[in-house]
Length: 258
Image 1 (cartoon, rainbow, N blue to C red):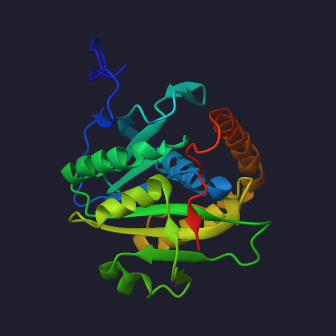
Image 2: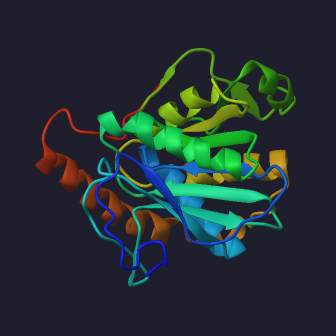
């Protein structure tokens, strides 16, 4: 149990970042990975966290996060976690659970407030755009603030998303960057709507390697794509069941429209 939680009456905050570890890096990238079509964001998060042996440095508490316990390799984890890697100047945010609509603003706002104290100037959201069936063309699309576009258009393997809406917590985070001294952008890829799509995650990871020289090894991910698909499909079905029990109008993952 973190010292921040020990012996305290915590209550039920709208949103609060609880820092559990030190992190010092100059202008780290904040990478946001949330599940949507193809569970692309979750696959990307798990791949990077495992390969770089990233450590959890903080988590978000909020009454708008569903009351559920998340287990990873048998270990109980917070459902909205923040990881850090100082040498790679990288902070990664991930969650397996949907956020209630009324919690989008307070959570995204408090997250970026905290990120500012960490020196974050650039925020990247990665996600999948749902398509019916297997995508006929694998590609990466980007949407960005004006000052970031000239850099992204230099990559001839990516295309600009000319028009669309990003909703949910990814959209809320990007919207918040517009009123802060931060640059926000998104990398998106068409992904199978209803089942995990590791191939979609690979497309974005390749783009991350080109843009930031992260050095993520994709060989193992490519070889284990089928095993990952089965594991992520089980998690996706559990979350889908939670949505069904919650009823219509509750938060979901269908947040990308192009």
